[in-house]
Amino acid sequence: MHWPAAYAAYNVFRRRQYPALRCAVRQDRPVPGFIHGVIWEYGGTVMEERPPEGFRPEAAQAATESTGYYLFRAPHNRA
Image (cartoon, rainbow, N blue to C red; front, side, top):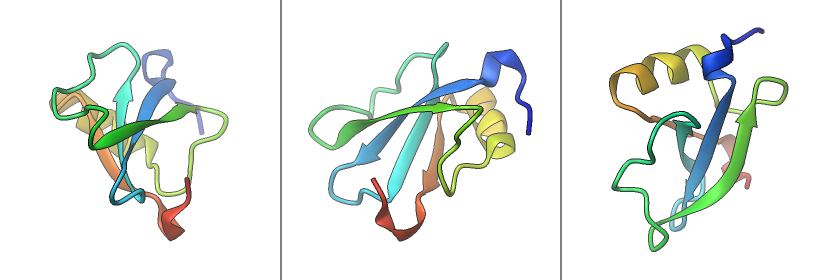
């Protein structure tokens, strides 16, 4: 799968209490105000070469264009 260059990298945050819940934010966008260290923690960067399970690039592209972020669920509660 090939992503356009502008969508090739996302910062991913995990919800501390529900680690399977993830929020991906394109690196060229600001982090939404609801993402803060008390509730969310940084979980890494999603790159084109290795998207995590549950991450759908097309859905991420559409969501970040309209809202600025993409919520998804990682299967099996993996970190």
